[in-house]
Length: 111
Image (cartoon, rainbow, N blue to C red; front, side, top):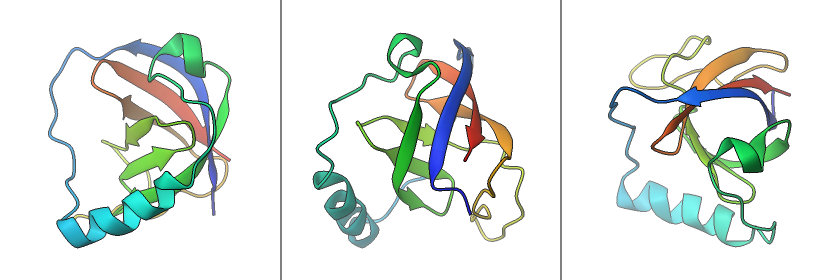
């Protein structure tokens, strides 16, 4: 099971997409996990993330993931099976295209 995301390449996001939304209780647990992160802050831009491997701190339905340093990714076309709004957790070595912030699409590898 992957615990880290490695950023491979980037391109501008030219489409809008609704992202998953945790409820209040789920967001409290997510917030608790990300508040302890003391990693220097990173912007969701290629200059800050190219070639970096960032630890997954928390997720919502294995589709929306919070990473160390602050970036958030959305697995908009997961390569793992799930159901009822859930994506299966990504295994080590799988590559996917994810939404990064509001302006970028990133090709990532889960490691």
